[in-house]
Length: 415
Picture 1 (spheres, rainbow, N blue to C red):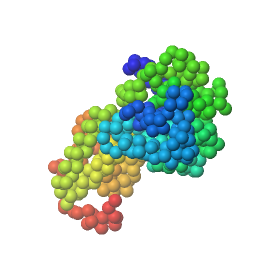
Picture 2: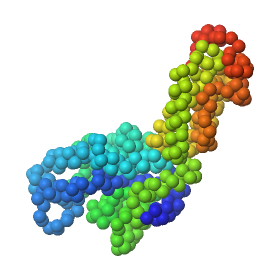
Picture 3: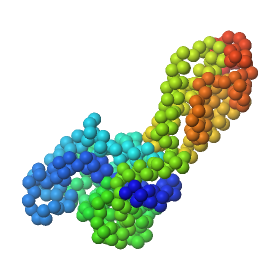
Picture 4: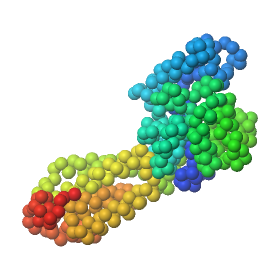
C-alpha cells in the first residue's frame, strides 16, 4: 500500500503544492477510527433495538428510525447520544489520540488550506487551529481566502441544532444552507478532491456525492478516495461517477506525502524542527546569564531576543502547518529589509534584534545544521558592522553605557 500511496502522491504533487487540492474527511478518519463497540452506528442500532428490514439500513435511515421510534420523531435523544459518544474522543486518553492522529498529520501540511467534512466532532478545526469553522450559511461572512477553512456540511456537535443525521435532515440540508453547498460546488469545480475516512460502499455517501455533483455533471474534476477495503465492482461504480478509488490508508498517504515534501524542501523535517528546538533551548539558557550593561552585551541581548522570537514563530508555524516554504522565504526578504532600514537609521538595537530574526530564517530556508550563533560575533561583516565598529576586538564596548543612556544620547526610545 505504500507504493500505491506513493504513486498517488506523485500524481497529485503539483496540485498539492499549488494548493489546488481539497481534503474531504469522513468519520473514519476521526471518531470512527477507534471503532469501539462497532462505532456510533452500532450504538444507535442497539439503543433503538432495530429489527426491521433491511437489516443494515443506511446511516440516515437508521437515525430516522431511532428518532421516530425512541423519541416520538424528535431529535433530542439522538443528539444527546451523539454528544455522549463524541465527548469520549475529546478528553485525554487512547480514543482521543487515535481520533486525532489523521487530523494531526493533515494539519502539519500547509498546502492543504481547504478541508470539507461531514463529521459532527470538532477534532479537525481544533487540530488545524481554525477558530470559526463554516457550519451555517451565515458563517460564510467570515470566510477568509488567506486562511485555512473547515467547511462542515452536516453541522457540528457544538451547535446541536445544526446536526444533519436523519433522512429528513439529509433531504432538507441543501435547501437549509444553500450558500454552504454553493461554496462546496465552487470548490468541486476548481479543485481536486481527496476523500479520506469514508467507506465508499455506504449508501449515504452516494447520496452526498450525487447531491453535490448533480449540477456539474461530467465537468466535475476527477476526485480520489482512499479506501483500503474496496471491491472491484465498487471501484467501477465510482469511476463512472468521477472518483478513483485508491487502496491505501489515510495515514499511509499522509505519511508518504509528508516524506515527499520534506525531501524536496517544501516543509522542514521533524528532525530539523527538533534541531531548531534545541537551538532555542540553548539560546534561552544563555540569555538569562547575559550581562546587558555594555553596548556589546545589550546588542547581543537584543539579538537573542530576535533569535528566540523568530524560533518560536517558526516552530509554531511549522508544527501547525500554517506557513509554506514560499511564506518563510517572503518572511526572510521582509526581515532583511527591516535590517537594512535599521542600519540606515543607525539604530543598533533594531539592527541587533532584526538580525537575530533574519539569522533564524536564513538557517531555516537553507536548512543549515550548524549551531546558530548565540552572540553577535565581532568578526561578522555586513548588517552588524555598525555595531562592531563600537566594540573592541574581544567584543566588549569601548565604554560602558546602558540602554537608557544610549537612547537618551541618541534621542530615541529602545524598540
